Image (cartoon, one colour):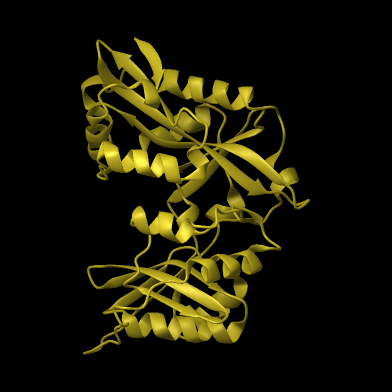
Length: 305
């Protein structure tokens, strides 16, 4: 067995089918290469580490360089672990361990103090991450979800010609996140990047003077990908618009802002306090993430990886 970087993987189709087998989200090698070039979190990085056995991709651990805002208002880079997957032909052989060690080694070489990943408590990998020293980021995992179901015969549709104003949306997010810590640093063209990755859609969004919302519709349910507002009145208008554009239900899986939570409750939304989907952190040098990023770490659904 040998460990190579994603760039050194000659047959990228092996990566494509591995992502399909593990997560159900394949991406053609050419499209993924565009994401690598576009997304600044991949800049000057190996993208991922691959365990190869006799020319076959046995496992993969993806990596990101993620800028976070500290409680002191500074930018600190942390290592992001993503797309951890093992080829079913090599299951139960500990194949993900070697590229994971390589990823941690890479982060330490970059002088990163923390490694972050997302997981689910129901996954076998969750216990493995804990054995490696990862702990849950409690402030994030305790953020409530809000949801509401309703029946109606028609809904309001947005004009097809309307498109998000990327510059305006970036400016609104900057104002909204200026006093928050954590995942608050984004590249200026994040709207176009996330649209290409199909995390957001130009067909299901609302943009106002002091806020915006991106929705993702599936099987009659509109999921809030991100709702940002600079005042309560704008939140109220955005929530109403979201309901008007939805068929049968609205779900916001991560209601960080207490003002938005108040608006949801005033409109009859129910709350789910805990989630099976968790964010985990590992200290690479003994530092406590709470002393660096505080007890109220911000993250949007769009920031999960």
